[in-house]
Length: 157
Ligand SMILES: [Zn+2]
Image (cartoon, rainbow, N blue to C red; front, side):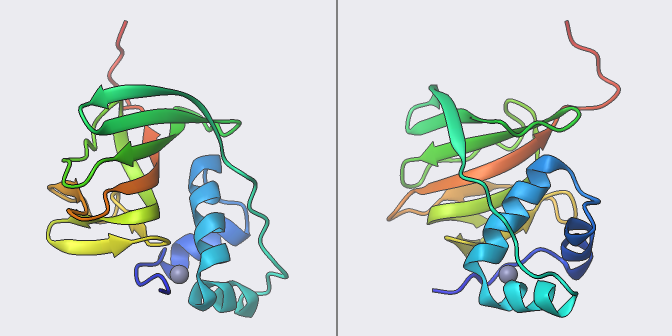
């Protein structure tokens, strides 16, 4: 099924000129690879093609029962980290752990955000539209990538 939730036109434009973080760029590149609609949009904006590097994950950690998280290695922006999260069906998905999520790309299965369903290939910007509650799909669970930004102005030691 074709993705139904896309990065904004502004996000695609920023991505094409390189004006976005490495993490956001990874998620958008993967979405564009999967999405005929966004692929034709970036072509219309003058791009000849989008490279999407393979994702390499570090060691998995159990965050909660049915919830595993791994850092995606080789992608690091300033104060930014990318995680691959694997959730069992019907599990509540933390947005603030280990730090605040700003973008999400669903890889497998699906999730619900405030009652709206997102499936494989769908892209959510939590920065533009914060969601109160994310939960993995009740039948399939989900695997997704999320970009997080460390909270600014809050020094932790
Ligand atoms: Zn798209």
